Image 1 (cartoon, rainbow, N blue to C red):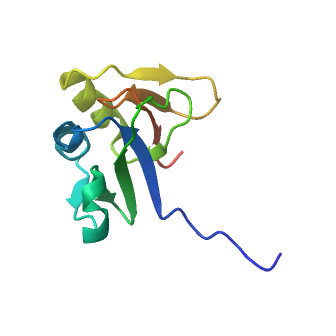
Image 2: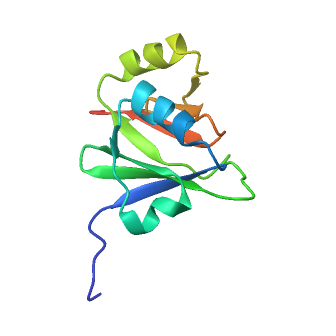
Length: 123
């Protein structure tokens, strides 16, 4: 092939209209992602953007809204057990999954019902 895909630039999840504050409370407040400014040309569309490591997660407004129950982003996490405890203490249901031998992972739902996966780094 004459090309290669080098990395993911960003991930987008959907949310209903007027949900920016809930997204900020969850992705910044609970998960600790940094909120970043959207380009001026895109601000009128609603939604909010976040950054972690060298990646971005975009929360985009979609109407009619339907949560992604199967499709999902997956995040490798340092401090895996601490994150589980933090999420549980924040009232978020953590669903552990041991269906892949040798992989420690769990799933949660964001405030809009989108599925998110977290995997323990370094295994």
